[in-house]
Image (cartoon, rainbow, N blue to C red; front, side):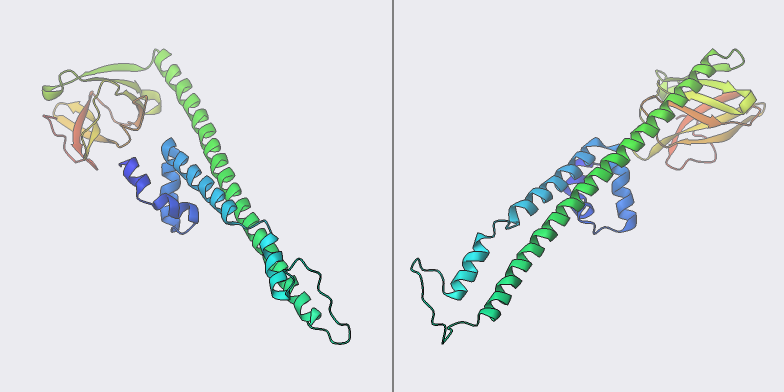
Length: 257
């Protein structure tokens, strides 16, 4: 996905405005977790909205007072003398009207304050959620690291080097086979990123006759920084192979890839 084009598409503004569907919100939230630039853009949009709200909120009520004075004919500097016997204005009506204006101004200010509070809450919730995700990822990473260290130090683990073939002669990988727990750890650091529309597929092989059994595809190869993948393998394997296949995988391996 082209993150720059995604940011420029305007969908993040709709996310901040709360007008996306639940599925679209989940998609945006997922990208926020994966891409710091998407998070930064969301925070900047929300900050801009807060500033815009503050700028358009007329918190100086002098204009309201002037409007009321104009309506009551009190704009002049000279003091006006009003006859008690024949009152010129219905003060009860004007007082109620003026109170309504002040009340409306107060409600507008309250609404603006509430909007700002909601924006602040959303920013805080987003940051807290991402922090929780980062903490969870750190814990998972630590657990994975401890597991890998245990595997590498275990003499009962079978270590199998895989050499590149045909067009991939310079590529390499390693399999660490833990037979007791029916799993392998594939160290694929020596493989290049697959081209668009392609994935790596892992195979368990028996040799006589040559029979491949798929152990699945590595769909997150490019996104994984360590390039170490844990894969279930309950087969009586005699060898392992990795091939480059169309997304989704295939039944039989493509030998020249």
